[in-house]
Length: 404
Ligand code: PMT
Image (tube, rainbow, N blue to C red; front, side, top):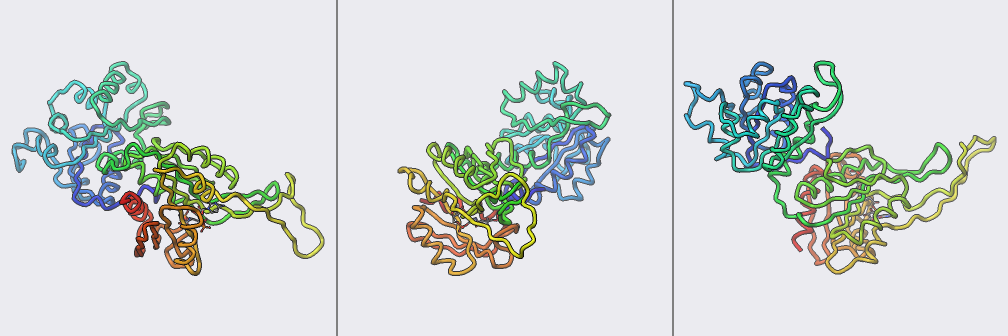
């Protein structure tokens, strides 16, 4: 799973996982593990169809508790298992959902344990189908899918491609990452709802000749964590991403760019409509004066001198036109005098907050899963944070900015 999807800290929240009869049922075990990694408590119900593919014991062994059996099970601890998820869990996710279960849920039939639990579940429900493409295209399935949307289910997938029986088309189980994010969004505070957020992230590439460029080792992780955290908390997010090869949830608008000047164009266009700007990208301050569009050939002489010209400072230009009500968060990547440099950039770029990382310290900065931050707010607030995952840093940065 990609690092910028690995949010944790949902301690105290519970999710109920429903698994139905599909060859994709084994992938529900990956989903269970991802939910548990996010610190969630997970209970599960397997329909009799699901039990044909994968056993409840496997879910128990990986940490689901309880795992409910069939509706009229004399060995059940309580006769009210069909009501418990609705009383205890914060969200319910049915993944994979078969055509039959979709029909049960759409029409409100209560003829198995999972369908009764769904009927009695008042909280957010997420559904991710998996089936043969012809079954998926059947008018009855399409109607049931529409009905589930109208009933308020969050619908994830299905994906297109090859399916187990050899057919190709729509009906593949969605990526576990996508389903996980839909669950996390359902249980996250929506305290950024209604806010438009633009985030720059990743490196820039400044071409010199047909095959060479000037760049840096930013992986885009820090910025992607900020974009996904804001999305989970309800914001309308626009990511302006340098070349880092990361994927984002479908709900995030992504503009892919290469050079600093392309990033500047995209960020400047998005900024007037945004409520919050966040520049986490490692932008090249200088670009080589291009050699041309051919490959440079080695000369007989030793050494090579390349001229550079100055790139626009994106963050500074956003700061210059910042309007009342807009908030701007910048980063500082330093190897020395971290606090003094961060304070200088906070002022010079007209920021509300700056997050500084010492990129020469272990586990911090470029390409790591973790970061150690010094955070300065224009009000004078100052915080040193210990080494934390970048997802945790992102979550805390939004908390800190929104305190204002
Ligand atoms: O992507 P990762 O591998 O996860 O690494 C994360 C990170 C180290 C890239 C990130 O945490 C970080 O520090 N990002 C800022 C990198 C940087 O360019 O810092 P800076 O101190 O040179 O620039 C200060 C600020 O101005 C930054 O917000 C930067 O985005 C912005 N800037 C800089 C130059 C420029 N031409 N335009 C800008 O917008």
